[in-house]
Length: 95
Image (cartoon, rainbow, N blue to C red; front, side, top):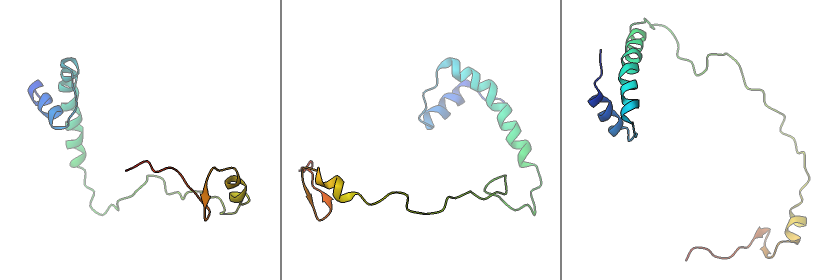
């Protein structure tokens, strides 16, 4: 299967990608090989094979959810220019 330069330009336009003439020439050489490889993979019988999210059957190591720092909100807000009910007050920026 061959792909013309015009087809490469049309694909790049549809994908909203800028492709130079040099790149289009290289894509015209590379894409037929990639499509042939995909076509070959489509011929593989996958009946009875369960889809998987990850090739490794592993679980993520998670750390224990413990408090590591003390609450210092009042200390931080003591130096803030303006606070109210535990929140920082800032100037209005949207009219």
